[in-house]
Amino acid sequence: MLYPPSPAPSTTLRIGERLTTVRTGAPADQDSCHSLAVGFMSPGQALRHRPPTPQELENAIAAIEDAVMPLARAIPASTQLATADPMALRLCDLAAPFSIQGGLLEIGAVEALFNDMVDVSQGRPSAGSPFLDTGLCGYLLILREFMHHLAFSTVIVEAESAPAACTGR
Image (cartoon, rainbow, N blue to C red; front, side, top):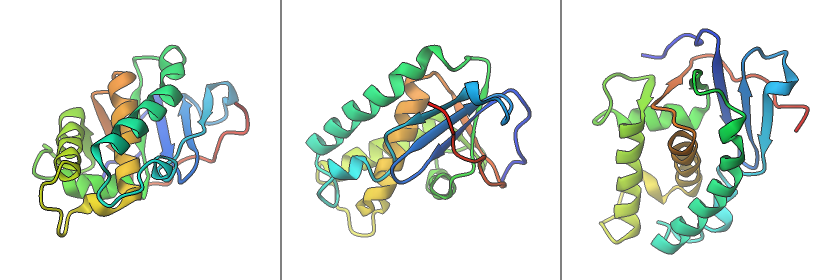
């Protein structure tokens, strides 16, 4: 079940191929919009193997942390994280065994998916694994680091499209 758009205040995350946008509060408030020069294909520059190697994952995590950590002071802890990204819908489907309900990804489910990705990178048989998809690996890494370092315990996966990209920062 997908959730309707979350009520304010919210932090909306849009992870694109090369750019991630983060908007907190009202969409018209440009001061609450941040652009990060990392997207789900950006870690792909480091994720050259299918599945990625453990070292490739470590390098990608370090790059994502560098992009995400400056937001720690800019995003209020009282907001609800939400996204309408198609990759997030895919993660909801993959997280079904770990998740209480569809449309809501808890950090525990995201961590379980991350651990599955790491297991595949360390040699667990990968035939049919979703973690052969470099874009999905990059998306999961960004979402995990964002939730982990900015202390979001859940992300609501919304049915409506995300707001437009930031024009500022």
